[in-house]
Image (cartoon, rainbow, N blue to C red; front, side):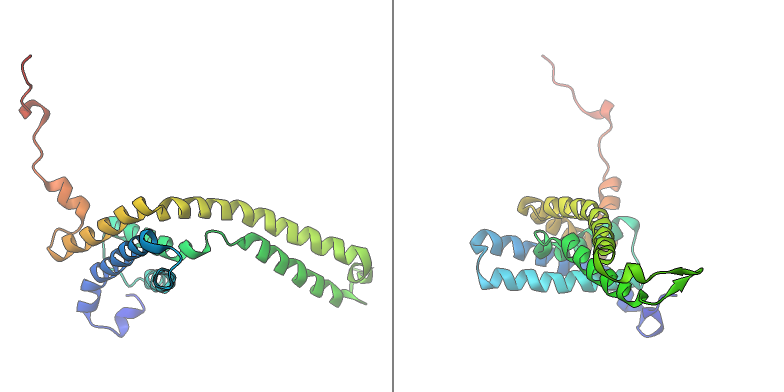
Amino acid sequence: MSVLEEYLPEWFFEYLSPIVLIAGGVMALLIVFLYLKDRDSAWYKLAVTVGVVLGALIAVLAVVEGYHAQTYTLILIAIAAFTLIIRPFREVHIAVIVGLFVMVLVYIVLGRLNGQEVGGVDLTVLSEGWPRILIAFVAGSIVFGMLRFAEAIVKLFGAIFNFWPILFVLGIICIAEAVCMMLGYGSIFDYIRDIPWPKPEEIPVPKL
């Protein structure tokens, strides 16, 4: 049993996934519309901000296992959340910010080693001067290098999913998935799979 199931009725979980998908899909389409109309407008910036909040809410509900849905649906929900959250942060250099933060933090911590000993070794030399600066710089650089690679991957997928034609298609798919769930098909993928497609031998071949 998830955390939410202790406090909320069963019908909430039955309709939560399609409601979230519709909200995410509509928000994606709204962002595309406002982006194409005027990407510098206050309405577009407001939509992006609301999208971040909605994406964060979607992610939180996933963490607390608020969705009772198939794997296909959960993947769509995760992609929608990621896309809405990452959009305004695609050009933010998070690795630099975190690297600098770690550098400052290590520098402060090293200052506390003044007069400290470990196994009879005096660590005071690490708490001052160039050794202190060098260690803090190396620590920050290591963290920066690790995060830089992860940041590049995240930004790559963020750019792909936020390319407006792809974002538009993603919004349509999210809404279609929600409609299929409400109509009892389970998932749009199940609906497509259950369509009685003609077998290859049943397809008429035109005579030349």
